[in-house]
Image (cartoon, rainbow, N blue to C red):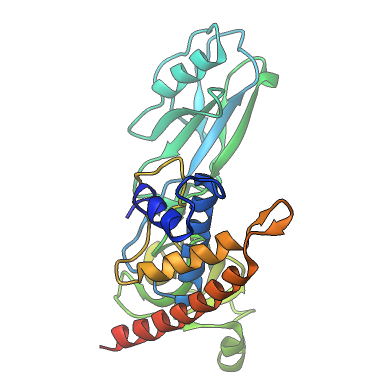
Length: 315
């Protein structure tokens, strides 16, 4: 299902085939908001296969170097294969740098309106590379700035390090169903701080390390804590409830929309209509009565989807 396929269906539902009330961006936004609400409420987006988002950093130029660039490093490791000559434009400069980033280490590309080099980590690193720093010998230094690696994530995987106890979660994770330590295959019970306080009273002050026995989900927003802290490099495989992986945009009309086939399309269309009819036009909602009716119907259909999901998982 793509935006190009469902936009005319929605316009037919709301009697706006001539695009007089809502433009394509408004409809795409309504679809995106509805899908996210369905995912949050019904908890039906479940994954146990890791989906990796590589981390990336940026080198941004506000002017042209006065001498060739002979070095670009990531966390002190040289990644530039050959010198970059003095260029006649920033666009040419960043293109040349990107093409000379060592592809066995990182992927170079152009971004930021042709003023930035984006350096992206290779596959298999996920959140590992977040925080890596960039440098270069571009002169003068005032014409260049650096943003460290960020936005790396693993949807269904924690990459453990010796001595570390707190780990970030992919922001799309809504809930963790279960967790297994890769090296042993042993399940790690999922608990909260109150449970730990009642059952492991020294957990906040203990220096114990070893194979993690508990995964604490409410220790810090967007993060989990393992107790005890791992004493070696290891992996934790997760089964999670997630939000949609991609955003619905009118500018990518043929991209597949992340909407499970077992969920009703009618529920999606109902939620979209509730949003569209509640939008303001000339300072007033387009049709508050229709918006409220569709909202009540949408909530009822989500309740039904929750029941169906429970029955499906029990079968």
